Length: 209
Image: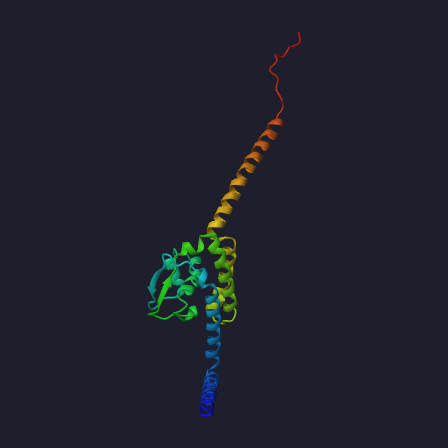
């Protein structure tokens, strides 16, 4: 029995040394990328349950693709919509962690844009997801990350307000409330201009003899 215990402890020690040796032999860039991948995975695991997968599609990455170009293709082609790629990353988290590491042949899952963004309740949950991702992008020092970060912050702010649908409704309501006020101001101005005109009498003028 003692021999078995000693053998087990020896194996644990050997595996521990191998693990430490593997980590120590990784170059600094690889170590940093491993840490970034871990940060991405932590964010994905925290928010995967909020993703609406109804109507999702599949796409195989082709040579020359970027995540923003793929996102624009599926999400209406708008330049700003290209920065909603984290939704695709969240659905494809078991394929790749870092968006900059996609390669041809990878099979991505493309969630339905409207079901994840236009619904107010889901949009607010997605806001937290995008906000958490900004922390990961602050760890990255690539040119792409520097470009992407402010867009993620902007999208997080937009979704926190309920998403594009909620903002459009709020703007429409604001315009509707401004219209009667503008009409009232116009009528007041019209009345004021009329009161400033000299009054004329319809009575006949008596001429002196």
